[in-house]
Amino acid sequence: MNTIIREMRPEEHNLLREFLYQAIYVPEGVEPPPRSVVDLPELQVYLADFGTRPGDHGLVAEVEKKVIGAAWCRMMEDYGHIDNDTPSLAISLLPEYRGQGTGTQLLNGLLRLLWENGYRQASLSVQKENPALRLYQRTGFRIVAERGTEYLMLWDGTQGGQQENMNMDAEKQRESKIRQWFSMWLDKRDTGIEELFTQDAVYIESWGPEYRGSGKIKLWFDEWNSRGTVERWNIRQYFHRGNQTVVEWAFRCVMADGTVQSFDGLSLIRWNEAGQICFLQEFGCNENRYDPYAQGNAPVFREEQALWF
Image (cartoon, rainbow, N blue to C red):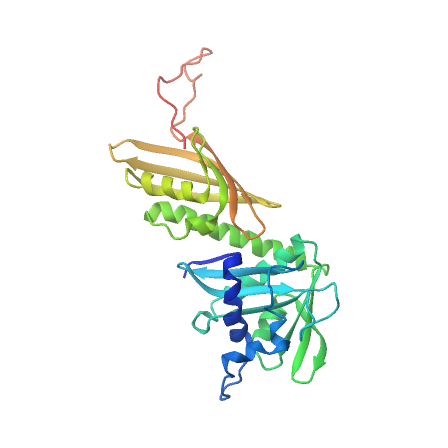
C-alpha cells in the first residue's frame, strides 16, 4: 500500500467529523454510538471552526487519492487538556486501514510539525483499554494522570532521544518518498505526483529544463514517458540535513529512437513542513568516463556531446 502523509487542505476540514467519530473507542461487544455523538459540545471542541485558530494543525494519510486517516491538534479544553500552552491532539484511521503502520507515520508527522512550529509538548486522552495506547507510548507519550477509565498522556519533545527519534522517522519517510518518485519512472505510472510535490514546487534538470508547479511536473512526466523508457534508477546513498536531502543515484534510459543515456547523479531536495518536495535540482555526470591524459601531457578529449540528466 502506497501511503502519502501530507498537510490537510482547507476543503478537507469537513472530513474531521468522520475521523472524530472513528477516534471514539468502542470495546468489543459494545454497540457503537450514533454518529450524532460528535455534535455533543465536549466533542465539538475538536471540530468547530478548525483551521481558523493559532495552533490548528492537521495531516492526512492518503491512499490512491482517498483520505484514509487524519491527525490534528489545537489549543482546546478537551479530555486531554494539560494547560493553555499545550495543544491537544486526535488521530484516527478508517477501520480497514488500521494495523499497517499508518497511524505511526501520521502521529510522528504531526509531532514533527508541532516541533517545527515552536511547540515542545502535546497531550491527549486515551481509554485504558484502547490498543492505541501502545502507539502513543512507542511515540514517546507518557502517562501523567489517571481519570477513571482514561489516561492523560503527555509528549515532551525536549526529553532525551525524542527529537532524534523524530528526525530518524522523518528521514525514513523522506527516503520512502524518493523511492516512490524513482519507481514512478521505472513503472511509467503516476502514483501521486501532485501529492508528492507542492503546488509551487520547482524541479530543475541538470542540463537546463526547469518545471514550476506540480501540474507542470506531471505534464513533463507523462509526456517524457511517451517517448522514452527508464531502465535503471538505482539509489546509492542518502544525506540528510535539516529540511534538505541529497540522494546519489545511477540512471539509464532508452529513448524511442534507440538513443541510450547512462549517467550518475545527485538530487538536492528541499522539503516543506508537511513532508512534500518544494524544490529539487539534479546534477549529472556522464557514466562513460575516461582519462584525457592517458597518452601524455596534452589532453585528448572525445568529440562527443556530454550526456547528463
